Length: 254
Image 1 (spheres, helix red, strand yellow):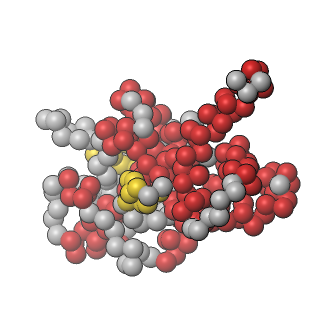
Image 2 (cartoon, rainbow, N blue to C red):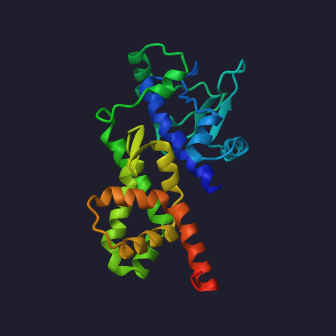
Image 3 (spheres, rainbow, N blue to C red):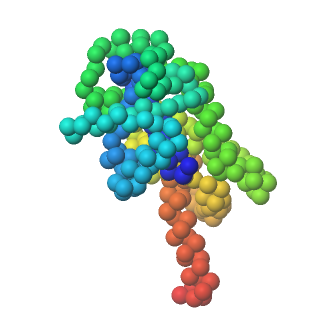
């Protein structure tokens, strides 16, 4: 499965929590979300054909099921989360319903049928289950430990252990945030865009960030915001940095 498909799957799983809180169930009691292609394009910064391809890739791996409604209405998306029984949607031929927790959420919030309310509602960070939050943080920490090759980084840069740990914790904190907007580089950016960018980071990006910190001669007043900015920009600035280095080596600084 491609990295972008994994990122999209993570975004869709986040939306499942919102649907549970809003009581979004179909007639069979299955939890669904609304996430149009345009929102995928905005979240991942990709074109229409790429977004459509990613949906098909997730369907191929059995991670989502789309139900077309026609009449210009967006598809209903059923996300299969095999790790969390609350979201373990079942197939079309299975008459089983979602867990009672989901049913209670539906009853408490009434019959909400306008699809756009899913997009406009935000989960209450103070009502989220502590155990679920811990599971999410554990999953994210494991993801970044692997994708950033932290064990290798610690062997190559043993003196940077504290900074590497700080970076991992910051990425986990940011990606597990329930806020819809996150402040990066002085601007409020959609949380899903920030998460998407961070989920694409690898060990090379972290080494680039460590080098940037070492070369920075200006005192940093807010290390958290500084790291957020450097990490968010790393995928684009690293390319420019290495291109500049190559040009310097080839043309003697001209």
